[in-house]
Image (tube, rainbow, N blue to C red; front, side, top):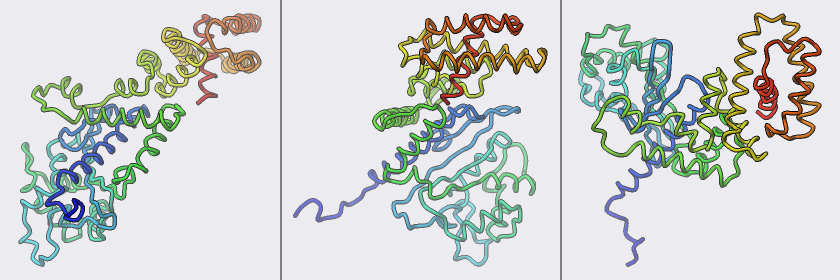
Length: 390
């Protein structure tokens, strides 16, 4: 008798590992969104849920809680009972089990809406397969604010019993609002069992956010490093529940991502503080161009600082200087860049100095120099370089 001829007693460990890998991949994709410089600033791994996305808003932090669930059979669909703990073979809904609702996948997600109230932006059930038609109908009924579906009515009726709020009994409109925070993401390619969909998707995200055009091997290494980071942040028992320790032990922020992408954190921070809304992309482009020309870390950071100085100067003076002069100033800068800098293709600071002297002379002659220093003029030339390379 050979090993493969008898089915194993159980494969729980193997199935659990596959599901954990899906969770890790989903958290990695969510973490890459931090590079976009949107409201997302941190992703927590296996803390409160499979992962939690933190967003910055005017009113403070808001959170998106995500639960990742997969099935091996791609043609299977999630049912009402599996998602909500509601039995479809019961005609009298008074006989539904509140404990089953509370302990269901949706129930565990809805608990976040009560615990975090206004801080909870959304709770998401993310999966590799689709949903039964009856689940879709219930979801549409809730999202449309109809609440006429028998199962929706039952969820509203049992909400306070299943998910008691510590401060007050929730009214009907409040319950409606919390139920509408539940969303579904079905047939998600990057959490499917095979890796074919995940690596290209993650590689494209890295390029979109950073402009780094990676080779196949470079992309796989970075993505594997990111997956390892997610796994590291998902492991270990947390005993110190201070905000700083949780951030350090269980979450991913911009610093860790820049380290994986080998983008200078100092250059990024200089650009971010200067108001560059695409600081990651700008830092990446500057670093790539300067390093390919032979520049070191200090020179890359100098260039980032000069570009920031130019951006700040332009922002502060745009309304106080005659608009015609601003247009003329930018025209002179672009002319020097395209006729001299772009032609030589020499982007080291030492090579750019002669172009700076020409630019300064032209601006002085045309009474467009204002109070601009060499650092700001270098930044102006670099800003064009970043623009055409992005």
